[in-house]
Length: 66
Image (tube, rainbow, N blue to C red; front, side, top):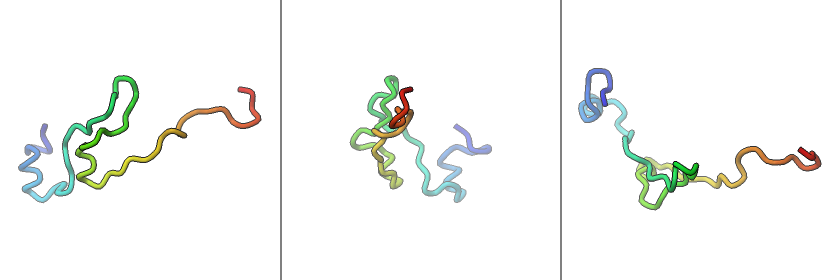
């Protein structure tokens, strides 16, 4: 993977994206749509904190039969 004309290590050595990380996030089961993070996910290294997504997405509106 190139960033401009540099590899990731060279890019960071040039002072770019010093706090960024390129890593597989360790999703539970992305093929089945489960994008929760497994324990030990590298996302924690950059301060990512998972949130509860159980109430996210389309759902019936109270009082609406559709």
